[in-house]
Length: 187
Image (cartoon, rainbow, N blue to C red; front, side, top):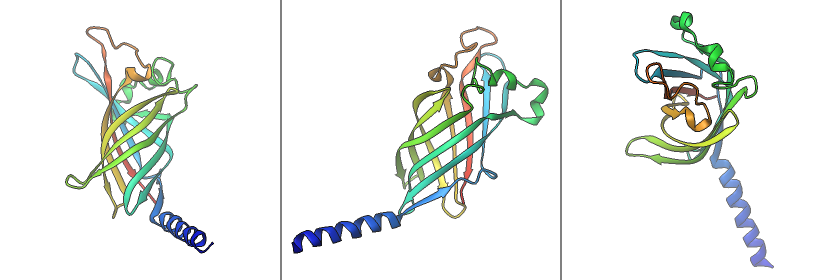
């Protein structure tokens, strides 16, 4: 009986300690942003803009990121103000691209996080859901504990999520790659 009580006590102490070491940081949606950029395959030119985040958080263990989850509000996709006259926003929101009416949010959920101390970066493998399609996406990010910030740049191949509009045309083909510059801040 003493052995059983000792095992219970040790397990309880371990669980309590593990919970103490985990910290969840909620996304500051007012300061955080995602810039996007789409280009033509064979012409010079691009479109760029912003999309807002709806919610998100990261979890750390001993000050190292171990998990993250984010919801992107696709209804907020907008053009760079300097490109408003060229704006493809209506088209990006329709069923050829992001089909925002049916899929108003995209999500990103970390599956694996590996900290690489010699480079001070995190290698992240995440489940990215766009248009109801979930694909694995790998990227690298830098976290700043003092600023409570998280920065990454990544490219995705839109065709993996079924966004195939105009990707095989010769002269005016839209590149399959969409670039993202992500700057997240946490409370």
